[in-house]
Length: 367
Image (cartoon, rainbow, N blue to C red):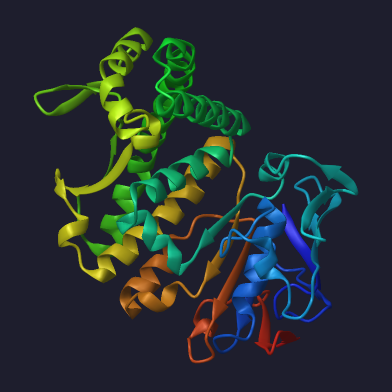
C-alpha cells in the first residue's frame, strides 16, 4: 500500500487543499510549528482512525471552526486505487473506506499499516508500564485483528470483575475469573512469543548502532511460575483460577484486580542487568528508535508485507555517526515520510525520486 494524496478540510492549521505524493519517499522540510507534524498526523489518522498526538478529536479542528475532514487516496499492492475518508462533524466521527461507512476502526488496521517514529516513543522505554504494554499490543494488533478482539474480551471481563469487587459480591466472581483466565493466558502467550521474536531483531540492531552487546527486552507476566528467580513457564488455567481466588481478599481491600495481563511489565536489560536506570539519554532515545525499527521488521517478517514509515524529526536526537548507522538499518518499506528542519542535511539521505515539500504556515510547495 502507498499513499497517493491527502485532502484536508479544517485539519489543524493545514490549508484546505490537496497534496499529491506519487513517490516512495517524501520529505517535509520547515521550521517548527509550520505544519510538518500535522501532515504526518493526518496520514496516521487515515491509517488508524485516531491521532497519535491527542485522544480528543475536537482538538484537531482548526481554531474557530467546528468540523474537519481528511481524505487519503492510496494504492493497494495489486495496483487498485482506494480511499479512506474521516469526517468529524457535530462532535461525531465517521470513517468511510472506499465510500462505505465502517463501524470498527480495526477494519483500517490491515489496510494501511504505518509505523510511527516520534519523540513521544521515549515513553515505551522510561514511561509507565501501561505505555510499554501498549507498544507490545500495538505490534501484535498490526497483523492480527483477532488479537484486538482478544484484548477487548479481556478488558470487558476485567471491567465487570472490578465492578463486583467494588460491590464486594464474591459469589458472582467465578464466571468472570474464568473469562479473565482464558483470555488473559492467551494474551500472555502471544506477548511472550512476540518479545522472543523482537529480541532476535532488537539485540542485534542495538549492537550494530551503539556497539553495546546483550541489550534485550524482558517480558515479566503478572501470572507466572518462577523457579530460582527465573520465569520457567506460564501457568495453566486452573493455576490462574486458584491464584485469583487466593488474591480476592487483597483485591477487595484495594478495590481492583491486582493480577493479570493488565499488570504485565516490559523491562530492558544488558547482560541480565537493568539497562535503563544506568543508560544515558542518548542510549534511551536509541532504544526507542530501534523499538520502532524492530516493530517494522517484526511486521514484515510475520506477514511478508512492507509497512509505511512515518518519521517525525527523530534523527535530530542522534549524533552524526549513529544517525548514519540508523539510516542504514531502516527496514524495507512501501513508502517513507520524513520531517526535517531546514538546517538538517536531508539531502544526504534523499534519492533522485524523493519528493521534497517545503512547509510554511500550513501550506506547502514542492522543491
